[in-house]
Amino acid sequence: MIMVLCTQCGGGILRPRVSPDFPSLQTRLRSELGPAPAQPEEVASILKNIELDLQDYEAEIDQLEARALFLTTLKERLSEYGHRARTLLSPIRKLPDELLCEIFDLCCGMNCFSITELPVSSVFSFRSAPAMSLSSVCSRWRKNALAMPSIWSRISLKWSTEVDDGSPWGDEGCLPLYLFMTRSVSRPLSVTLDFETYPGLNDGQAHPIIAKLTHQIHRWQRLSFSSHRCLLDSLFGIDLPHFPLLEDVELDNVPVDCPDPDLDFLRGKAPNLKRLMLISESGLHVNPSRRPLTQITHIDFNPNLFHLEVFLEDNPNLASLALNEDADGDPEYTASPRTCAQMQALTVRHEANVRNSVFSAMRCPSLKSLHFEPFTLPLQSWGGYSSFMAFVQRSSFPLTTLSIKSLPLSDYNLVYLLHHLPTLVNLSIDDSMLPPGGRITEEFINSLHAYRMSSLRSNASPIIPRLWSLILSCGASKFNDALVVDMVKSRWFSGAQSGSSGGTKASSAFQVDCLREFTLKFRKREQVHHSVYATLERLEKNGMRAMVLWGLHNS
Image 1 (cartoon, rainbow, N blue to C red):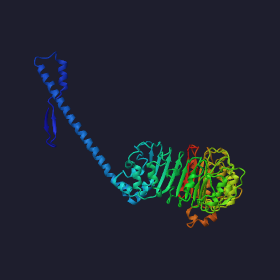
Image 2: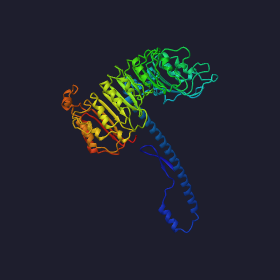
Image 3: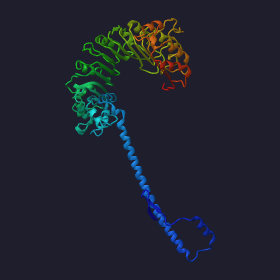
Image 4: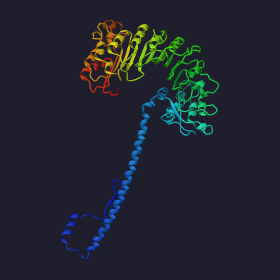
């Protein structure tokens, strides 16, 4: 094969040695009887040239394939370069450092470390330590992350290995936990401690890893402690420290045979303590002779009725309280309601069998937010309704937010309750895990109508006239959708009619405030009448936030 250069591009052109003539060859094959004396040399020459041409073609194909592979590589390389160059236009690169730091602060939670063996080898992953992950993306992110001691000050430590005085525990400088302590500078710390085993040495001293944290107690601002094996004060030795910055404490699973050591440990030691959460079977045992925790504004605990009375008496600044509805103690004990003048938020974990209702020990004239959450499920009935209604009538509070979840309350009792809450603005009801008799009914929906009377409401005056937000989660498999839409329409009017100064004039004319938000979740319905709910779509276009969901099979 001869290589000839192209006159136009200068590239090589292959000229084969053999030009295939299939018709002539076919004629010779069909007409000649056998080879003539001169033909073997001729055929051998043709076959030799064909072999050479095939080798040339194969070599050319190899060159072209190599060139195609090279061009493909250049294409991929250029495409990758273009992709990286395009990231220069990424919106996040346009964010100023101030906004980027705000995003870091919002998305960066606790940095979790786990000690599962000694000596320490690996105690964290980038997924569990978001501050380390963010600082490893690029130089700009690293610069901003290192300039934010707050994201390094959120430390969670889980300890699940036994400690032996004679065993090595690793190089202190290699433990990432210490790097976080350094990078947090002097920022107040949020510390979570979860001890499955006791992290102490035989001489009673805390392990050096724990000691590194306890040496910074003057920086502790939030503390969550969970352990069945040790008490919090055992980490500090004989000299009980002070917590000058501590504001938020959560004690979970403290040993039940120790009635109140951790609170004794905190009394007088944490002058800024505002929030206390106790998760313990033994609850809180209050000794009147001890110094009260008067600075606390929020507590989550489970005292008996007498201890609750004492605590409320000793802590007049309490603004928020969460507790179980049934208080331990003598069922024959008669509580004397204590006035909680500052309390604005109350969360009650309701139960089926209520012997000593916490409602009998309280009077909350300033309460604005009330939440019912389930403590035991499922509930067939609720025995605390009468005590609760006595609490409502005794307090006469200006309640604006009511949230009820999994509370077996009949629609009649619910409407009766709402009659006593004329200041209510936000109402949320979730009937999950309840029998049919405790679920949201069509009669209840009809009773919320602004001007139509119902079987549950004989008075033409609307209940909860100040309602702005209504969120319902319903477990019914069938429902009158038109009834729902009629109720919502009766509580909505246009922005021009609602007025810009609070809607006082419109409220007087319509007897209700304009409903601004409506959410209805049908957990067990496969479909709804879309044409019926089209009205809500029009209301949403005019300012209402309306949402109807169905097919949510979660309860």
